[in-house]
Length: 94
Image (tube, rainbow, N blue to C red; front, side, top):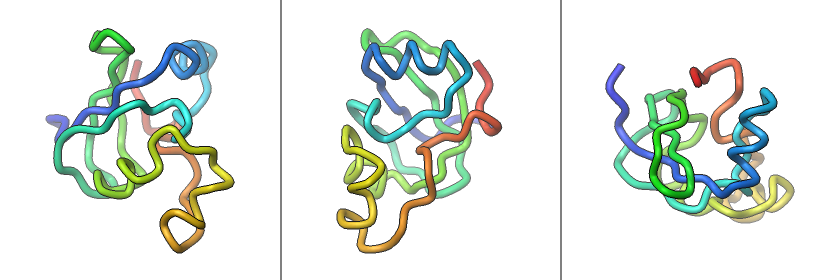
């Protein structure tokens, strides 16, 4: 599947992915592209290096709104309960 967008991460999120964790909104520094929930996205490191691909649990607009924010803030920002991580580890290939 060809990625429809990109998620750029901070160093902490890169380290977390390396230990098998899911990608949380707090580790996302920028979102590019136009994608919907369930679409493939490229996951990039701080310098733009390709790290992984995965299936997004949020649309691009939702991901932009919650990027860099704590999971507990998502419901307030979006107006409804969040769907957990931006990309779950089970839906990601490193």
